[in-house]
Length: 134
Image (spheres, rainbow, N blue to C red):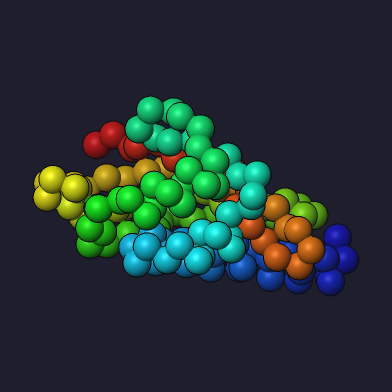
């Protein structure tokens, strides 16, 4: 692999890791603009709750309606890989907060997020997360 290719891959991996951190912040603050910009129009999101597939529009509508209070979102075990115009990030997201009924929760989700580079911009193309049982 040429030095330029390795540097570009490393730069792209850094961008994807930064996007994961931004994603948590966007969820916490309900930053709809981040989701509109960062989710590909043809994204597929698989819910950990019931395995249902969601579209970009469904994810954004759910975000707008969500009454969850997120107290903390902590990423760990992050790994990024890039090959050409595709990238994958895996890791664990620990989310603590209160649900719509005010009940406290503390969950860990193991996830795989797939990114696609369209033009010069990376976007989330697919996301799947699974609850980690204690």
